[in-house]
Structures are given as structure tokens and as C-alpha cells.
Image (tube, rainbow, N blue to C red):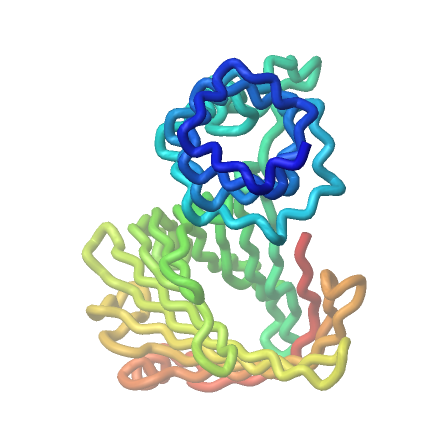
Length: 329
């Protein structure tokens, strides 16, 4: 049958079986489809722009067997359709249930004999860095600076020691050792706080410091020590790596030491007491973990400390050739 000229606006089609009908030319804008069974109908050519679907119950419709791969929807005008009252609760999709996945992503599967895996960011690590282990030929002494740490990227426990060992005479050892809590303060700066012990003064101290990188990649450290007798020591240091090639590096380094008050028993004056500088030529090997070096070091007394050293027949200035190694693992 050809229904293209039929006016069906007032018809009740609730009991009609229209599965084999061609309705491509029909005007159905005023029809009531709320009770129609349209499960077997071919809607590919229908103009549905004026249809009201607000009363249609589509909860029981099964779309699983529909093949829509060859359908052309480019000419369908659905701008006037009202989907506000449609019940689509039975359709696939929507929000997943609250218990769809377990919080640890195991989905109920046990971890086995090795237990729950640990994320890389939560894994504690450790490291050892020997920044200086060298011999000063003119002063007949070994200088060292060693640090080790254990912890995470956001907090660590650090043990650090620096000093010198005389190789002749009474073989005196002067060292300053600290145990501190390490934490990043910003992108380029880290903070330290802990306790320390100075063998030269034979006194314990409370330590606080800041270590980081200044503009132009200048490595900087500043540490303050409050001794048990009220003395305050301030150590300032700066270092720069001038890279000549992939392996050869020139490293200039400078350090200053100051005290808050005079201590004649330990040959300490108020203010800046000494300055030491060193220039090293380093050759980095084994993925830059091992770097032997040669260089020259210079040390001088400052301010009132110069006069005090002269009174005790001690040298005011000294320089020496040096050779050693630095490494980390």
C-alpha cells in the first residue's frame, strides 16, 4: 500500500501491527504513538521532526541485536524531539557502582608471596657522596668531606663529616660531624636541622643550614652551629663546575668561617677567622661516579685572627699542591 497521501492525525493505532509497512512518506506529526508496538518497524525513511516521544516507554526495548552500521542518519531531523520523560535506566552505560573496583586496584586478587607492591615514590633510598678525599703535600695532611643519607625525595636523614687528618707529628684529627633532618624548601633549596660535634673545640652543637643552587649554577651552602657554651659558628661555601668537555671539569671552591665571640683557648676571634680556596682539575670516569683530581689550595687568616696566629708562631697564609678523588654511589 502507498500511504503517502493519507491523513492519519486522528487515528488510534495502538493495536495495529505495522511491521511490514513502508511509512517513508507519511505525515505522522499529530499521531499518538504512546501505545504502539514499534519493535519490528523500519524507521530509516521516516520524518520524525514533529513527533512527541515524551510518553514513550522504551525501558523494555532490546537494542543488542540491531545492526546500525549501514544506516544513514544525515537526513534525519530530530530537533523537535522531547526526551525529557524517556526511561533509559535499562540501557548500557551510566555511572559505575561504588564497589566496582577495590581501592588498592587488586579487584580481590591476592598479591601472593611477595606482598603488596610499593610505588617508586614511596620507596626509601640511600646514597653516599665523597666530595673530597685528597692529600695536601705542603701541609702534610689529608682533607675529607663525606656525606650519606637515607630516606625519600621529600625527607631524609643525613650524616655529614668534614675535616683534616695530620699525617706527621701527633697525627691530629680535626673534624666537624653532624646528623640532621633534610627537607626541600623550594625547587633549588634544601633545609637541614640537627646536632653536631666539633672535635677541635671538643663541644657539641645544634646545627641548622640551607643548601642549594644560586643563579649561574653556583652550588652554595650556609650552616650555623650553636655550641653548648653559647658560641655560634657560621660556615659559608660556594662551588662552581666549569665543564671543559664531557670528562674534564675545572672546579673552583671557596669557604669562609666566622664566630660570634672570642675564645682564646681555641685560638678563635670574633668575626671572620679564615678563608680557604681551592682550584681542582677533575677527570670524570665511570658515568661520572669516580673523578680523580689535581689542584692547588690556599688558606689565610682574616681580621684579628691574623695577629693571634702570629702571637702563637702559627702561619698566617699557606698554600699547597693537592691530589685526590671524589666519588659517589
